[in-house]
Each structure stands twice: as structure tokens, then as C-alpha cells.
Image 1 (tube, rainbow, N blue to C red):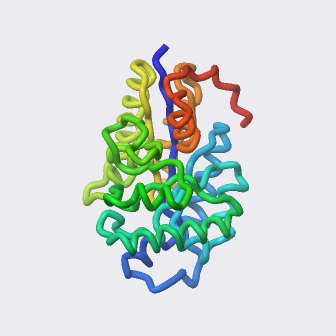
Image 2: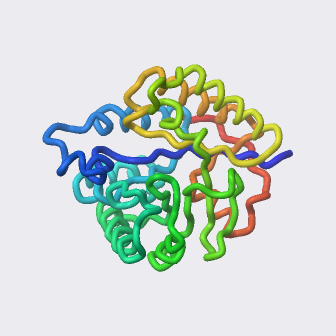
Length: 263
């Protein structure tokens, strides 16, 4: 049977990206909608299907929304690092990259009580120095853009769990003429079906402020998670679990039959 793996990931928390872009000077005086509505909606969706996901969070949130960062881990999900304040990562000079990565890792570790071991570059692209920076900080994998959807071990020894833009909710919804959620659902279901048939890796990247606060977009995501959960040819893994399989040279091992959802 072809080895088919689905991985559901979520990027960004609260107003960190706005702070990084300079459009906001600090935390909102009122609660951010992605925290009050988006994250709770995503947690409920994942719990319904008994699915663990990976949340890539900016380190800034470890200082300003420490409880929300800790909740990711309390709920049994995996925490990854997503820059300090969603900087255009591929534009950073080596010293700035190292300083921000170290600061973000320390802030997330302090808030969550566990150190993140996975990283996804804000904007998708690493720099030539990113792998060395991550290795020094104890990271085990990178989940940025890669060689299509081919998981691999990078030259530095890091595992890579890649994504492509068509698997990102913002690619479809954050445009001048946003795609209909039903069309996005059908496109993602088509890709999932091909992976289930042929083997390979299926990764979605969603955001609380894009999908989590919109009922139709949530329903589209729910349909894809449900399809992956119910297909015996597909196993669902966190990004970290996939990375560990790669590092242990077990990527090609068949997945066990999925357990029944606990609801």
C-alpha cells in the first residue's frame, strides 16, 4: 500500500504579524479575534476528529500572549517557532536572524514549558544560514518551502517537512477576488485523494485569522480533516512526528490502521 500521510498545520497567532509589519505598535487593547474566536474554533474542529496538529507561532506571543501559547501544548498539539514577529525571514542578515531565532525560541519555551523543535519561516523561505541557526538552537526540523512536497533530510541534518502555496488558506482567500470555500475544499480533497492513491505527503497551512473566524472556510477545512481521518489509506501525523520518522529512516514504513475517533 502506498505510504500516504496527512499533516494539518496552523501558522500565526494574534497580532504578531501586524507588529512585525509596523502597522501596530503592540498588543491590541481589546482581545484579538483570532484568539477569542479563531483558535477556539480550530481546537474544536481538531478535537471533533481526534487530530493532533502543529501550530507555528511567533515568539512575540510568548511574551504578550503566554497563556495562549501554553494552551497549544495543554491541548496536546505541537508547538513550532514562526519567527519573532513574522519578519520576512529570507531578507534577514545572519546576525539578525540568529538573534531573533534565539529570542523567539526562548520566549516560546518559557511560555509553553517545552522547547519547540520545528520551525517554519515567515513568508515561507529560509536564508542560507537558517539551517545552521536552527541546529545550534536544538531544532530537529524545518517546515518551510522545499523541494515540492518531498520530505527529506537536509544537508545540515535537519528533517524537512515542506509545504506548497496551494495548500495554504491565504493563497486562496487573501486575494482581491477570494476563492469560494467550496472550491478550496474540493481542490484540497482532490489533492488528498491523489496522495491516498499514490502515496506521499499532504500538508495544509491554515490561519486562525483567515479560516478560524469564518464559518464557511471552517466547514471546508472540516471536510478535508474528516476525509483524511476516515480514509484507511491515510495516516495523520504532526510535522514533528513526520520529522522523527525521517530522522529515524522510517519514512517509508506503512502507517498502522487508524484508531476510531474519540469525539
